[in-house]
Length: 56
Length: 397
Image (cartoon, rainbow over all chains, first blue to last red; front, side, top):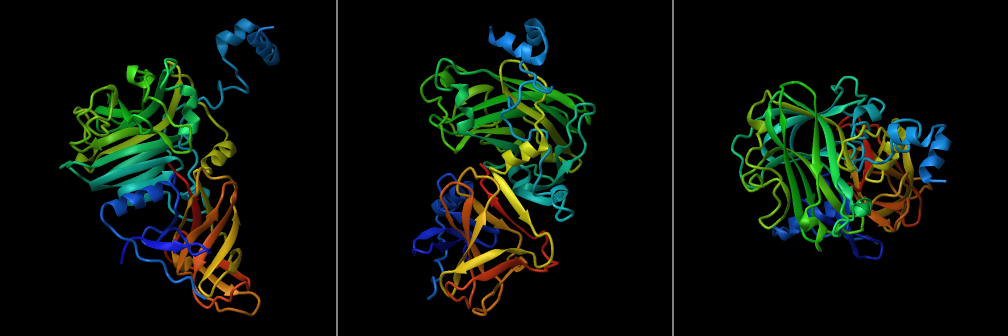
């Protein structure tokens, strides 16, 4: 299980990531320190889990 | 009438008295908000027990990585060692500081590899540093003063990292002379030619302007710096080779408080900010909501599918930027339909479902059995495990 899972907004676009291990929901925001950490994690070659289906 | 005379008349003093005794002394204590470091007396600690009506801990044990315990102040670490962090009531006598940031070594790290470090750090937003006029010939001199205590005497380093434009760092050694004795240290931070030149600017935005650092140890790739401002030509350096290793013995501990960074070449009296004001300022970076009773409601949620819903939430203070949502444990929450539609359960995840400035935010949550557009109630469960039960908005630098 990856450290992060993508999260979706209501319009179906990726809004950020969720990590139950870190107990955090992180928005896609270039000034957010957790998002910066997430991008560094991706740059190290890691891949987040895909988002769950948005449901009907 | 000169400004000094006008101020003196307001204060019931002569102009010369006003100039001699204090500059703009409103209610005592000197000029307010002169301290560029928030919560420098370690007063506000939303994450700790004293702010939580008995919930939570006042001490964090087994810390091996970066951790906040006191608002705006963090222990930053990448190490093989471990420590206990405490908001300690041990503070220099007669100075009025309510607490100190204590690091107590519990596992040593005597083989300091590249990339390893242990620091006490705080951050300053770029918007709050524009008056330093960095990147111009008018760049201001700064003075940092602080109180420190440790059983381990010797040479320590204070550092500032500037990440905007040309990346630069400032290093200055200081000495803890007497074991287990509170000592006041003063660091002069003069703007060098590279700070005054193009590239010395600090971006006028909500990003990190300064990272201010008290080094406890540094790995080999960080501890070969020299004093003063230097460009990050060989990466970010935060100490000199004289820096001690606090983590070389489990008997070691380090205390810090009374931290003040101000414009000028002299350390002045500490700027005590009222608790309500300091708390509000800190909430720009972190605001926390604790469970106040079993089954206390968080609010009504609006499902927009069978598995997703949003909780409209009004924060107390506009955050610095789009915040992360933090929580203690998913089992601390539950949801159920309030209109006879939809089943109940425990959320399987949270998300930041929307923020566009201001104090309103949508907290997204996922689960199952939702009925779109049928209101649900989300509440804190009556959990007694994995305490403390809370959620928080984190926009720390």
